Amino acid sequence: MEQVLASRSVSITELKRSPSAVLAQAGSEPVAVLNHNRPAAYLLSPQVYEAMLERLSADLRCAIQEGVDSGPAIPADDVFAELNARYAEPKRTTKSGGKRAA
Image (tube, rainbow, N blue to C red):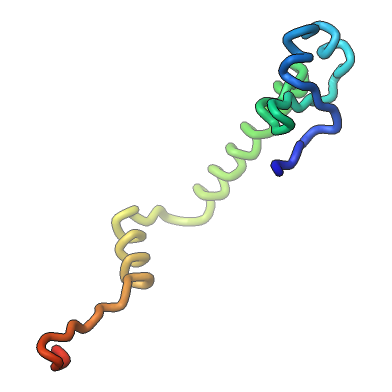
């Protein structure tokens, strides 16, 4: 069963029946919208959604700046070549006629 990441929940049917009441009862709390007892969506107030976007944007800016400050850039081709060399599948020897290939 999926985890519900909100302290309040409402069925889709109940939300359809009375969206204004659900919003009024929720206040600033997030509400899990359930379909067959599984989260189908989360309902957030505009203030919570805006704060979430601002936090994500700030975290992203910080991560980008950390990357810039970490030193010179490494070309992606070099990184992938190193990863491929490090994690490449070992070459398998094939058997032909009962003899091992050299």
